[in-house]
Picture 1 (cartoon, rainbow, N blue to C red):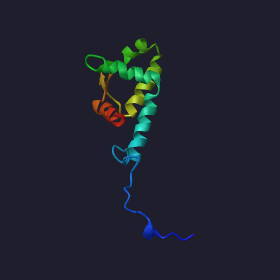
Picture 2 (cartoon, helix red, strand yellow):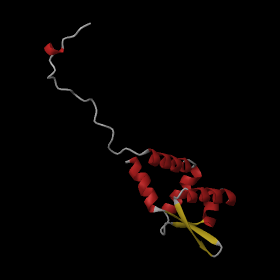
Picture 3 (tube, helix red, strand yellow):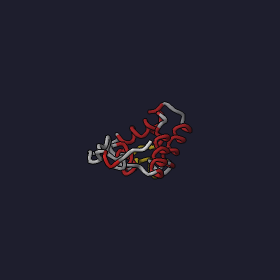
Length: 116
């Protein structure tokens, strides 16, 4: 079939249905990192730990305080703290025989920004 485009009205305005999706786009590297962090936070006990630390006046907690509060065995609490620490969400400081954990505020800000 032959179409003569000289007689077609090509002065019509082209309407775009949606704006481009480039604004606020995560890179693949960022998305992979965030997915790892969200998997770590997908464990309810870890979310509770983060919440407990965040709501303390000094925003730190001794590992020993979490065992009774969470109702979990000490090795289980230690495992969750280790996972949060290795994910880069917590920092720790040894004071004598006890280890105190703090949330890294820049990591929380990163998560907040990724979701907003």
